[in-house]
Image 1 (cartoon, rainbow, N blue to C red):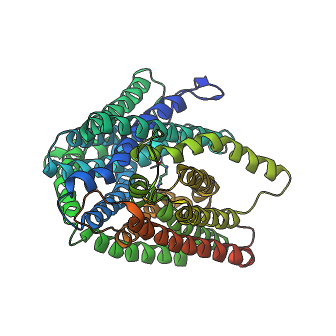
Image 2: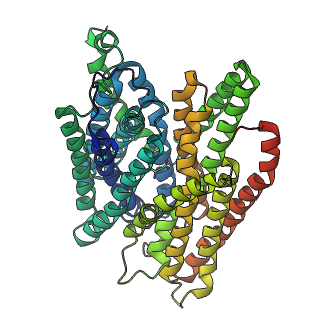
Image 3: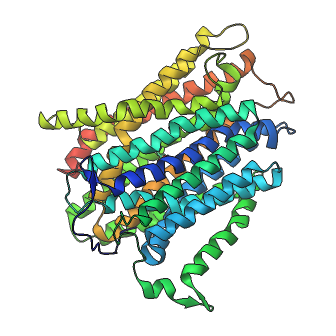
Length: 503
Ligand code: GLN
C-alpha cells in the first residue's frame, strides 16, 4: 500500500495549509462513505422486511448475512492493499474499487431478490480495492516526519463521517417515502460522485506522479496472454458470483468457518514474525501492535452492532415518531464524531504538553469501558418503557454520544500507532491486520445478532417481550465490555512494565 511512484512536483499546491490533494481525497472518500453508510443504514431493515420476510428465522438469517458481508467487506481490503502495492498502484485500485462498488449499489436498486447477494458481493470486492488505497493515498501526500500528517488524517476522518452522517438521513428518507430501491440508488450516485472528485483531481494533475503503478513492467506483464492491468479487473468481476454464493449460504454460514481458519493462519504468521525479529525493542512494539488490534476488534464488535441489532431495536422499541426513522438513527454516530473529533484531538495535544497524555492501553481501556456504559444505558431504557414496550429516544441519543467518544479514544489513535509500531517491512501487512480487526468484529456482531434474534411468524414484531430480549442482551453485552475495559486498565501498568517505553 505504499506509494512507490516518485513525485516530480517540486512546488506542492496547498489549501488551508495542507496539500491540495487532501481535499480531493476528502470529497472522494466522503462520497464513497456516503454510499457505504447510506446502504448500510438500510441493509438490516431491508433483509428483515423483504429478503427474509417469509421465514420465521428472519432475524437469524439477517444477522448471519450482515456479519458475513461486514467481515468480507473489511477482509477484502487486505487483498486489495497487497494487489495495489505490487501491481496496480493506488490510482487504478481506487478506480476499480469505486466502479465495482457503484455497480453493487445500482444492482441493489433493481428490484430482484437474487441480484441482492450479487450486489453485496460487488461491494465487498470494490471496497477491498477502494478503502485501503484511499487511506494510504492520504499518507503519501506528506513526507516522512511532516507534522501536518496527523491533522491531515483528522480532516480525512471528518470527511468519512460527513458521508456517514448525511447518507443515512437521505437514503433513510428515500426508503420510507419512495421505497428501499431509491435509497440504494442514491448510494450508487454517491459513489459515482466520489469517483468524479478523484478523477477531477487527476485531470488537474493535483497528485503529481503519486499512486501510479509501482512498476510498469509488472503492470503490463502478460499472464495467459492478458496484461495484469486487464486480468486483475476481470478476476475481480469473476470473484463476485463466488462471494455472492458464500453470502447466500447463510444456513451453512461458510464465512464464519472461513474466518476461523484465516484467524489461525494470521496468528501463526504474526507469531513467526515476532519470533524472527532481531531486537527486543522491535518485538515489544509488535506485541503492542497486536494487543491494540485485538482490543480494537472487541470495540468494533460492540460498535458495529449499530447497523444490525441496534437498528432493529430502534425500529421495534424506540419512540421515533416525529424525530427520525430507524434507518436514519445510523447517522447519529457520525454526527457526534463530526462534533467531537477536533475537541478530542485538541485535548490529546493539550494533555501532551502537560505531560499527562494517557498511554495507548489506557485510552483503549477507557474506550472499552465507554462501550460498556453505552450498552448499560440501553439496558436501563427498559425502566422507562411505555405499555407498548417503546422507550424514549434520549437513551439512543446518549448511547451514540458515549459510543462516539469511545471511538475517538481508540480508532484514530490506533491507526497512527499501527504505522509507528510495525516493523517497516511488514507495515502493509499490519495495516491489513488492522482492517481485519473490523472483519472479525463482524463475526462478534453476527454471534450477538443470532442470540438476540426474535423468532416470530408475525413480521410486525415489537412490544414488551421483544424489548426484554434486547435489554437483557444489552445488559450482558455491557458486562462483557465493562469487564474487557477493566481488564485492559488493570493490566496497563503490567504492560508498561513489560513493554517499557513502548506507548
Ligand atoms: N467509521 C470508520 C470508517 O468508515 C471506521 C469503520 C471500521 O473500521 N469499522 O472508515
